[in-house]
Amino acid sequence: MQIFDKLNLPKFKKGEVWLVGAGPGDPRLLTIFALYALSEANIIIYDALVSDEILSLSSRDAILVYAGKRGGKPSHSQENISQLVIKYALEGKKVLRLKGGDPYVFARGAEESFILNENKISYRVIPGITSSIGGMASASIPATSRNTNSCILFLTGHNSNGEMPDDIDWAAVSKIPVVVMYMALKHLPVIIKRLILEGKKKDEPIAIIQNATLITQKVLESKLNNVSKDIEKYNIKSPAIVILGPVVDLRSKLIENVIKDAIT
Image 1: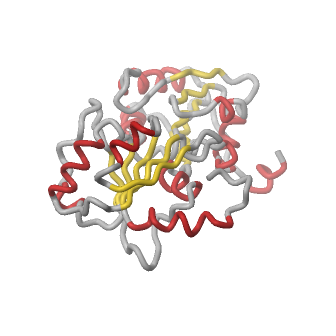
Image 2: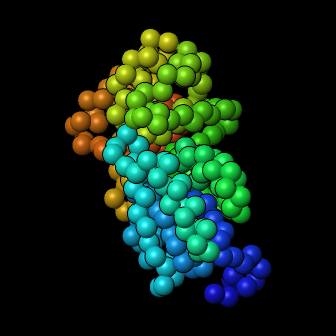
């Protein structure tokens, strides 16, 4: 592809592993570097949230290996995935480890990097648009706005065992004006109770974005004390991101003149 030549992108060498962010879902939001990696790799080990449309952009000769990781659901163990990556790298393959969003944002990319270091395997990290930032923008919810917040917090709603994290200071979280939660739907009722107990207003605006950036995207706007009922009422499912804070209320104003073929 001509644009690859213009950018002087590095050669994908045999025995290397490239950890690549596939972005929030829409293949149009892939970075050029990610698209190049897809075209060069001969082994692609991909997670559950990587779409078929993105995989279709890989080399015709590439072998696709499903590594099915979904938060809180049965999946390959992290150890098994890492051993698979190492195996193919030691065989001299050009290994692409493809992750939804960004590999270093709640995607265990750091863990895989440490293991590659331990095994003396050369690797590269290619960032991707995170599902939170990309999803919020696609839903016309800004991450920041001068009149609403000067800080933002990102957290995960479950740990590696699928349980609610026990190392989160909910009192501190309740004081942050905008909170974005990954993989939080399962434990959201408990999280809501903790936040209200720690001082969050019951009528705090909250949004849930399901299937962010995809044609099947659904956006639910609600209030903190009503959202659990609304999730059930409107059949909101994972994968989804949760946004809590005053930026949610900006959506109704910002969406007015969004181009009609934009995903909203």
